[in-house]
Structure formats: C-alpha cells, structure tokens
Image 1 (tube, rainbow, N blue to C red):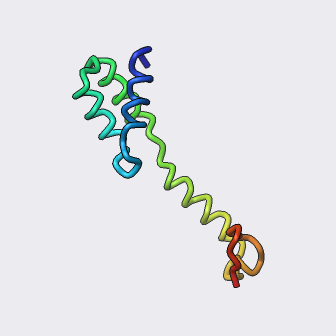
Image 2 (spheres, one colour):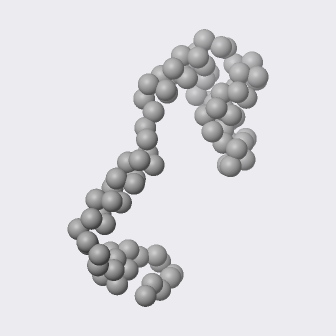
Length: 88
C-alpha cells in the first residue's frame, strides 16, 4: 500500500461512526477527499481478492465446537460461559 494511503484510510475509518464504518464508506470518503485514484483502486482490487469470510469461519468453528455435545446442555456442561451471568 502506498505510504500515503494507509494513514489516510485509517483516519477516514476512525472518523466514521462505527455503525457506518465499512470499506465502501471508507473508499467513498477517501476518493471524495482527493486521494490519488490509482493507489486507491489498486488497494480495492487487492482487498477484494483477499476478502476473508470471518462470519462464516466463526460459524463453522461454533458448529464444530457444538457438534460433540449432540444434545447435551452446553451451559450446564460448562462449555459456554458468559462472565457475570448465570446460565441454568
């Protein structure tokens, strides 16, 4: 990533309210802010090629963790815990 691009994108992202923060919003604001178009376009292309489906990965890991229980109550078994909350 070009030397100017990373700090600029970081600042744009920090300035956005967390619910409005997305790559699309960051890129739109960076483009409107006068960032050179080619480095931004190159980064957008790089990001799209390397996108990680983190929600999918997390869901698969949760299924793998739950599967061995096969119907046992996870909270009662102590497999799930939520600090400060009692689960019965």
